[in-house]
Amino acid sequence: MATQVKVPTQEAVPPRLSMRLGLRGWVYAGRYPAERYLYILHRLSGLGLILYLPLHVWVTGRRLQGPEVWQQTMAVLSRPVFVAGEMLILAAFVFHAFNGFRLLFGHLGCALGKPAHPVYPYPVALHRQRSMTVALMVLASAFLAFGVWNLLTK
Image 1 (tube, one colour):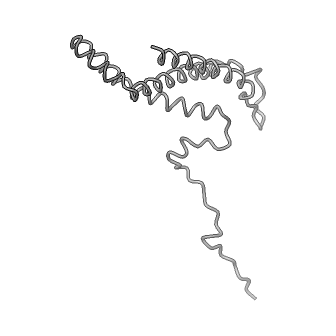
Image 2 (cartoon, one colour; image 1 turned 90 degrees about the vertical axis):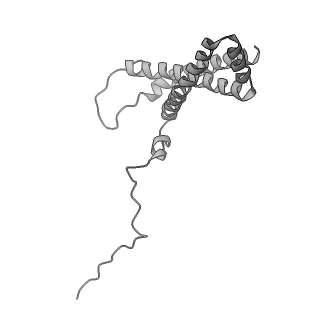
Image 3 (tube, rainbow, N blue to C red; image 1 turned 180 degrees about the horizontal axis):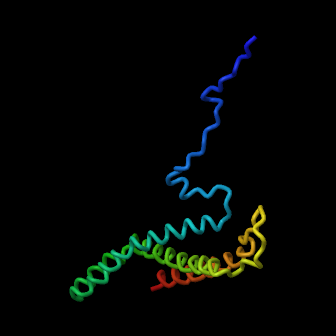
């Protein structure tokens, strides 16, 4: 007597997680801690600052064309949409700088603790670095608040 082999249908096979997640894989951190999202924001702020650089060079170059051209350019750039963009650039710069310090300190070994044997599960230093992360982000927020206040009161 032959036994019947049960062939799984397409619905019964669990979907495989593709190694090509695209943008979702670049942004979605899953079960990772907040430091992963800070790293993603670091990338995005860096891209924003790189994209801003040619505009900054162009605006600064307008000064060479004379005082009247410079005044016209500043009149255009004093509109609310450009002031809001200036605040976003300030926020990107401050965040990128302070998060860069956090990454630099981590790569230099600050707050890593004593070396341990590489026994699975590997010890994670994120809990030791969390206080440094919070302190640097609070400092970044203070600098950002001061910068926004300075922009709004000029």
